[in-house]
Length: 268
View (spheres, one colour):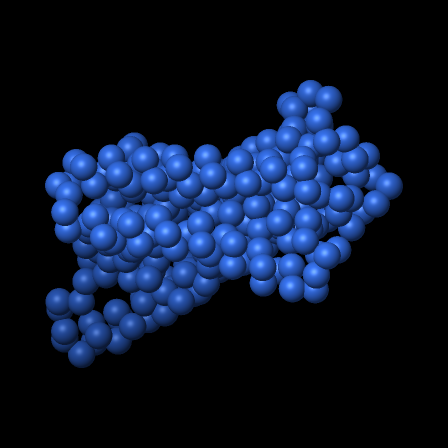
């Protein structure tokens, strides 16, 4: 089986719910933008009548609003939930084409790669759509307040850098962006590995989810403990090298564990 065909099949299966998620994200943010523009314009007119001249808006006032933050939080939660469901869906769908693939140990890693590639494409697509939506929201934000002669301070880039969540999503440098994307892939891999460990253990014990979390917890705690021990003993360049090396080690370890449970331990 060609891995590209599997990726195409996985993407086709997720297209409708993914488009619904993106639509909800964009509609929610633009609805919040419309309310924000209306309420801030009314507030400024009231302040103008009282003679207070130094009221200045920034785009950060908009993206710092609770509806905007919740929209991003909902999208992130949906991505995390689907990282679980993308496996459980196939384990519960006995008799399907994917289940027949899982019955062949030699083909199982192709399934793993296809699901990982699908989740990575979904995350990158979400980041791209959110960036375009942010640009359009900023244009609407500035043009509306300019037409109302309401002063706006700050640039789009400054607003992104000032917001902790958006700065993590869109860091200033390419290196930081690649590191952040590696962290995203690592989170997806941890979820995949948890599911495969839990599915491998569930027939043997009712405590399979707890055992899987404890085993993965050790994989997380030990490197983090070593990192905090070395943090004050290394220069910045050395620290960056250690972080990158640690991420590569984490990714390799989770792929190896996932592969072992998927091909050797899992009964479907």
